[in-house]
Length: 312
Image (cartoon, rainbow, N blue to C red; front, side):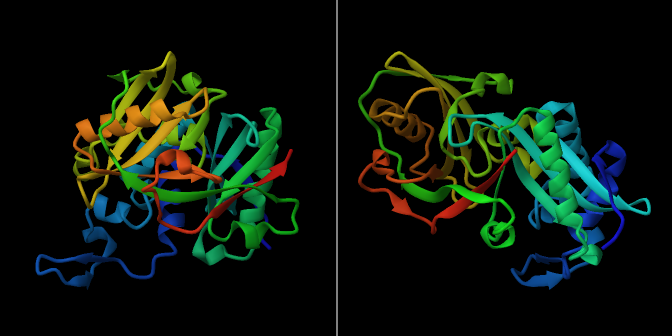
C-alpha cells in the first residue's frame, strides 16, 4: 500500500492522466496501406489512432478537451497521487432519474497506472467518490462494467439492474409527429427523466458526452454523423439522438430520454425518422426485460450486463 492523496483533477493533470491510461498498453499498432497490422511507436500514431485504444484519455490533446468539458460542469474528474505523481484517475456524473437509480453519482472511469496496480489506488478513488456523492445528497453510487460484480461483491455493493444491447430494423410507419433539430445541450432538460434506450453509463453521462461539436478538431470524429432531435408525439415530448456507425453508414446507435413511458407511437416515430435519415438498422442498450416494445424483429447482440450500486 502507498500513501495516497485523492483530489479533484485540474487541467495541469492532463499529461499525467494520459500517462495513467497509456501505461497499460504494451504494444501500439496500426494497419498500414497494405492492410497489414504493424507495430509503431506511440509518437507516430495519429490522434484518432490513439483514441481507438481507449478514448479521449489516450492523447494529451483529446484528454485536455475532455477534461475541460468536465471541469466546466459536465462531470467530476478526480486523481490519486503519491509523492506528487498521479497514479490513478476517476470520473463520475451526477444524475437524477426515476427509480431504481434516483439521485445518484455514476462512476464511469476508475483507472490505475500499471506500476501501481494492487496498491489500493482504486479503493481510494472509490472512497473519494462516495464522499463526493454524499456531499451532493445522492442516494447511491452506481457503476457498471464487465468485472464489477466480481470485484465489488462483499463490499456493500448490490446488483441494481441489468442492460443488454439489441438491434432491430428501422422501418417507415404511419404516425403524426414532429422532430426538430435540438442543439440545446443543457442537462437540466432531462433531470428526473428516464433513459429507456441507450443507457450504457447513465442518462446524464450519455447526454453530456456525445455532443458533435465537442470533437470538431478531430477529423475522423467530426465526420461521424450525430443527429439530435426534440420529438413531439401524441402530446408528449422526448429527446432522441442517432449516432452513425463508424463501420456501416446504414446503422445507427439510438439514445432516448423521456419523462413518460416509451409507448408504441413514440417508437414508430423514432423508427420512421431513422429511416428518413437513411438508416436501415438501429442498435441500442435496453434496461431490463421485456423489450418487446421494440418489435418482433429485435435481436440480442450480447448477454445481460449488470449495473451495481452502493447506498450512501
